Length: 359
Image 1 (cartoon, helix red, strand yellow):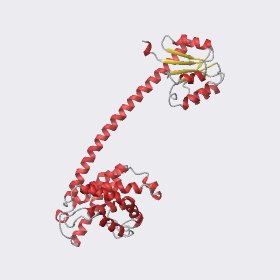
Image 2: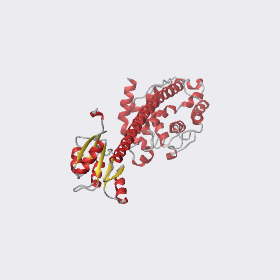
Image 3: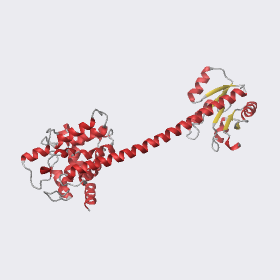
Image 4: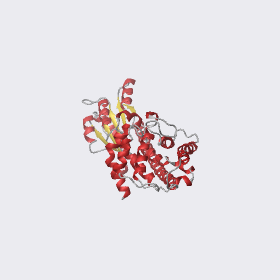
């Protein structure tokens, strides 16, 4: 059927060449003849051919100038162009190919050769489109499968983290709370100029997922300590502090040589450093200042804020104002002073988030 035949545009200022080319191609294709590059560009506003046969040596705008104009427009840049030329100069051929032409046909052209060149290039275009469609479909399938796997992994991870938290009579809300607070703090941290080089490399969603494992080491702590309603003895507190070491060891076993696993790298930082303090009085390593990784310093803020504003067997829930005051007082002792300043800036968002979770 006529409508199924592919459209070829033939551009040449010579009427004989237009007639010869149209006669050679009309049996297999619809052929639209145009007598100048300017008319070609005008015609392309309402018609898009599968291929353009473009004369090089034309008055006004020549073929080289015309192909530049084609490549500058989104609508026409992907249309394959075969140059028609009477020139026999390799420099001209190289220039045309450099500008994006897919082939050259020398005039006066042989009709069988012209048909074969057009057939081959249209076949190549069909194959390119088919391959692109296949790749797009494959990519969509991979992305869909990946989303399913990641969703399942997150469910398993959350369930495991909530199980750990539940052992000390704290609901899994601590996991969700710290994630939400961490996201709020991240929105401010990523805008700090001196940290932009570091934060620009973070995968935020992966980072937030990994934060669920910051207390995973509690799985190794005795129930008699985790569930104790009163104040811990010195020995019991020393034992509970070991959850950091246990957590790091657990994550390192998961790594098992997976050096490129950013998820586990983030998780290990959160687990290892969220109890370190700015002045060096924290545990387990007694690090101070910027020797504590930034992610660990951030987790220290959100972990303490949630601990203060949540009810525990041994304490009531503090108000946002009380928790914020305690964090402010911990500036330069417990917490990174810059992070405390940023917390102060987003404290209202912390309060709204805390209120929404408690209501």
